[in-house]
Length: 110
Image (cartoon, rainbow, N blue to C red):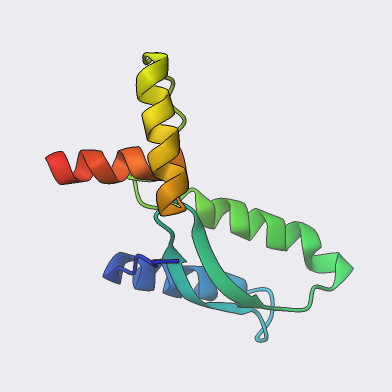
């Protein structure tokens, strides 16, 4: 699966780690990247004391609000069945989601 890396993700990874280390020195993430489907992935190492679980959730929520503005949003379009069938077939052929395929096509056309 292709990974999309960016300097911005490096800065975001640093910001996440700074906030996580407030909970404890053993908390951290690495290898933050975005998939073509728009999902963010990373490796995370931590052990959570039940007393800190609420803090951990709060930190992750605040960090996720800081993601780049181009994050995926749900959109609904009404297309002819023939177009939907072609998009679906091409997405299956390439092994990607329909949304990722449409996003790829649009980025190539601009």
